[in-house]
Image (cartoon, rainbow, N blue to C red; front, side, top):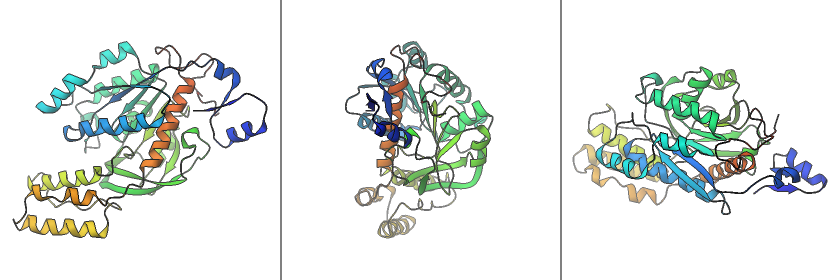
Length: 351
C-alpha cells in the first residue's frame, strides 16, 4: 500500500522522484478503499484454459493481502472449444454483456494460440476489438498479454504485428529501461521473461505508436505502457507462466509431431532446460522414435522437479504495483474509471 505524505518531510519528495508511490494527504482523504473487480478475458486454447485462470488469479491474489479482489472470467463466443472446455465456460464464466452491465475496475486480456500474423484472419477479431474499445472508455487500466498486446497495437495505433520467421520460445534476459515508473517500483533492474510467439511488434513500431517501453530485451520489447503511461499495460511475453508451462508446451509440440501436425521433432525452448534435463528428453526422443516409448512415458514429473523459475518474483512485483496504481486512481463508483480530479491523459501524474 502507498505511503501518505502527511508532512513536508523531504524524504517523501525524494522517494516520489525515485519512483515510489506517495499520495498527498488530500488525495488519500478522498480515497475510499473497497474491493476491486478485475475481469479476465481468457482466450487461451482448451489445453491451457484453466491453467491460465490459475496463473492470473494467483498473481492477483498474492499481490496484496489487505485488498479484496473479485475476479470475473469471460471469453469470446467466436473461439470454438471442445465439449469439456465449453462446459467449463458455460458453468463458470460470465458473458461480455454481463461484464459490461456490472462494470470493472481493471481488465486482464490473455494471449491466444494464433500463429498467423494477420490478426484479421482470427475468428475472434471483431469481438476482441469490441472488448478493447469498451475497456478504454470504461476501465481504469487494461493489462494485455502477448497476442492481446499485438491486437491493441493494431486496433488503436494501426501497427500490425509481423512474422519473425521462427518461434521465439524460451526464457530470455530483460532490462528495465525506466526505473522511475511506478510499475517498476521495487522490481529488479534485470530479470527473465518467458516468450512463446511467432510474431512481434518491433521496438520501432512501439515508438511510432507513442507507446513507452519500460522493459526491453534482445528478443524485443516486453513491458510497455500507453501514451498516458498507465491506462493500457502491454506484455509481449508470458510473465504469467508457471514454472512448468514451457515444458507442457514442449510436450504438446511432441504430440503434434506424432500426430503429423508438424513436420519436425520440436527443439528445446531456449535457456529453460538444464543439460541433464536435455539429456533425459533426448533419451526419451530416441526411444519414442524407436517405438520403445509412447507419449505416456514423457518424463514430465521427473523434469518438473528440477526446473528453475527466474521470472516469477519480478512479475509479482509488477502486478502488485499495477493493482496498487489502479487502487489509487479508480473511482468509488465502478461505472467511473477515475477519481474526480484525475486526468485520463495522465492518471498517475507522471507527465
